[in-house]
Length: 406
Image 1 (cartoon, helix red, strand yellow):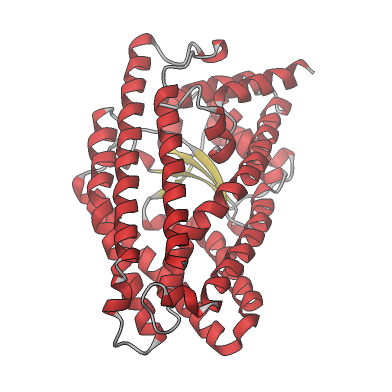
Image 2: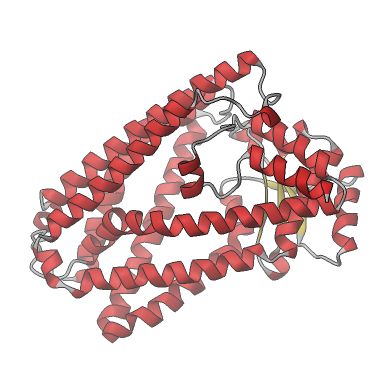
């Protein structure tokens, strides 16, 4: 029965994601709102439609490959067959998760290669060499192994040591680990990119003056060498305490004027002033607690594991069921709330740019970034509500103009 339930849940989520992809594909022909009609020229807009179609198609192919792989691994009882002679729960979990991670990596590399090297390269976004792509894939795989297997072994140790009290201790452990990762993120990100301090000059002086105006302190203003991999632009706020850092893509500095970058900076500072990173961390704590409860339930009932051919509880199986059968369904509903709250935070951060007198410059910057990043100017409403952490470009422009008028 549990195998059937898992298969149904995995299939339902796959079908729902397929529906959303088809919805996005059809919505490419939706009229462009007047406020953003000047973002793309006619030829560029037609190019965007082709790019969007290719990206959606490769996403669908990737989802289909992953769906078939997971269903085969679970429904054939392959994990139980391969670990039948292993009594140690740690070794069993490591074997199962190693097979799973390697299988997903191997089957995912072709579509990832097509997406990153072929499609992104075809439209002028990708700057990664094949060597960089391969090295990145290896790094991601190593990190996936370390995190997945490390956390699973910690869960096994705690669950076998204190039983039901696992809920409290493991939640605290994962939350502490998450805080630790967030604290170290400015350092860990150097694993993939190079960061240099923003050079002295008009731009740095403008940004520093804005920080000093509010007595706001950051560790540094860094420029990331994003151009080594992509032509797309972004900026973000990261870190806690003395490690607080604002990061600007080098691409951002190339395409925006000083006032436009200052407007984007005001937005990022708005996140800091409203403690959005801290608020997001608190929300993450409750999500982690829920996920731990779900993981605990998956190891509490031996019959679940028996249905997949195991004689005893399999922690490796529990992790895979959590990832593919439980979390996607739960996360869809959680995403409705978290995405809504995130979009509210983005509106509030945009208001900081208006307060600083950079409302029009922020609109100009957002339009340029939308064009540079090949953004969807009119995405389906359902997709926005479910998964957009930022409001659409039209929504942000309307909100900024409304605040400027008040």
